[in-house]
Amino acid sequence: MSETFDLIVVGAGSTGMPAAIFAAKRGAKVLVLESGAEVGGTLHVAMGQISAAGTRIQAAKGIEDSADQHYQDIIDITDGRTNKTFARMAAEHSADTLHWLLDLGWEPLPEHPVKVGHRPYSVARTYWGPEFGVSLLKAIRPAFLAAVERGDIALRTSTEVTDLVQDDAGRVTGVTARGDDGATETFAGLKVLLATGGFGGGHDFFKEVTGYPLFTWAWPDCKGEGARMAVKAGAEMWHKDYFIPRWSGVSTPESGDRVDRISDTTSRRPAWEIYVTNEGKRFLPEDVAEPLAREQALLKVPDLTFWVVYDETIRQDAPPFFDEVDPEKAHSWMGKHPSFVTADTLEDLAAAAGIDSATFLKTVADYNAAVDAGKDPLGRTHLPRRIENGPFYAVKHHGAAATTIPGLSINEKFEVIRSDGSVIENLYAAGEILGMGLHSANAFVGGLGLMPAMTYGRLLGERWLHWDHVPDVAD
Image 1 (spheres, helix red, strand yellow):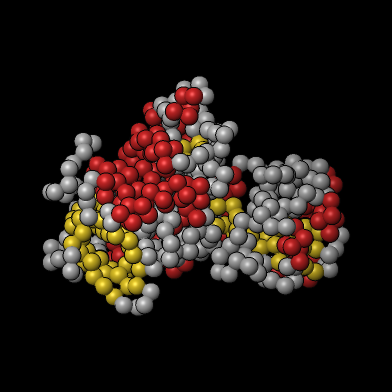
Image 2 (spheres, one colour; image 1 turned 90 degrees about the vertical axis):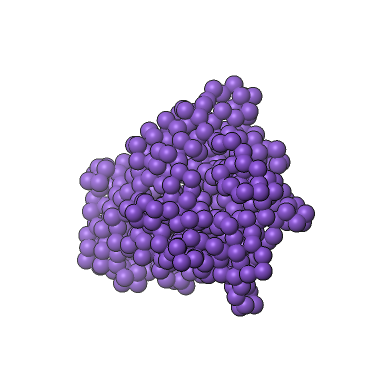
């Protein structure tokens, strides 16, 4: 360890970059270590939705809003199950973060703000740019790399932090990291900020924490290394009982060990298909429009896995349910990939898909009877066609994790804490490594993922991390 940094930031994403930028502005000596080959993290793949109240965009459009109202909406949407301390913090400081982004050149879509989310806000306060998360990255990255070019920030990419260095008293004094050449190096730091994101790319760790299998389109570098290191150092994890799957992902010939969002089975048009589990059972009215209702139903399905089943008549007559892939391209995968199964008979379809045949045949027969009667026992109202004309098709879908709700436990200063509430000195965490506890298990709150991540990073660098030789800023 040849030199000591005021701040070592692990991860150069939506939290790490703002934290480094603002700490460096105050004169701190900052090192950023990024496991990927380039900076940005989940901003490369995120939807890029951010929410803020009391912004100058709202004011220009005559929209009255406030941080108090934003906070109350978060409480209402989550039925009070949000982390209230950090929800309040996000609501009070997000407008300043949005204005910082605007000053960096970020431009939301001209019709924004809008009302979105599983349960929309009471006021239009959510924004995104034309390139979603990439729009945010294109605003933040130049400012970050300019600070690197000036020498205000030291940056190492393709460098994986493998361990935290602690003294005999348990205080964190630095990190050990491995470069892409395999060489290991130790860096000393007065403070270490873990901003490594969630663990939506870490299959083993995800199962260990949540108890569920992982099907994911999360950023692949988010494997949970930061959380693992912190737990090894004594940290506690919170919100482990908060999990709800996203609806839904499909493994394709092009997706590798991930899933893709290639279908939109209900939000663009009512379902023509039926959804069955591997046991051959339907598990919800397929035309239910409320996202949370679908996801809560999926949470009870074994392995979070179901099949979308239809016949040739539906394929010809229905609007395609494939969304982010050409429907004919998806159809060309039939019989050529385990997620895309076709057969001339329903019996053969069940056998090819590994669905319980007897139960499946009864399920289809019962559904066809419901179509004839115009009344479905599960409550489905859109009953356009029987499923009876081969060939038949089944596409395997999985409840997916785009983000992870459990995360490291911290105090109000973002210091990582142990199960007894004591602080692991000099160790901080912010961003998705804290989990998405602002949302709770009840609902995803619009724009409340990236915005808190950026806001907490900004505030840590600008105000909340203190060094003897760096001026403090009043909270």
